Figure 1: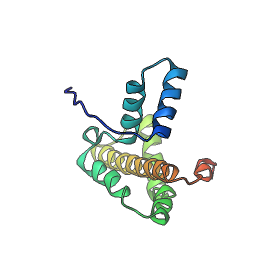
Figure 2: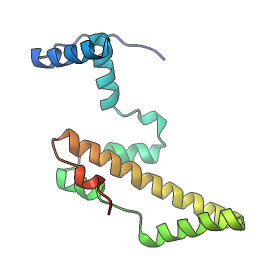
Figure 3: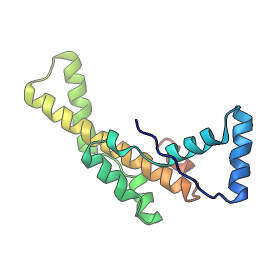
Amino acid sequence: MTVQTITIDLPDILYQGLKRRAEQTHRSVEIEVLEVVAAAVPVAEDLSPDLSDAVTQLTVLHDDELWRAARSHLAPEAAAEMERLHHKRQSDGLTESEAEALASLVGQYERYMLVRATAAALLRERGHDVSPLLAPA
């Protein structure tokens, strides 16, 4: 991994907050800044192009659109079919077409979960209380 050096001017209030965190964790301010930046910037190259695009598009949505994304779910029929195929795989095994269907459904489910989690994180960053999203349905 290559490393880039940058110089930034931070407002004193931000610097003091980072300095306090660094002292509490017995680390340098530089490491704290790196941790904050790493947490704020998704590593898109770890995602498929489709998932990377989905996550990137969320960053430009208005809050009401993010709330809808954070509350989205896999269609009940798809969830039921995924569960049925999981049970069949454990008991009888799957045909090739069933295995492909299950893989597709799992991919859809993972996409929904990533979109929901990212939308919730963006809402939290924007100052919203996302605790209702964590409550069991």
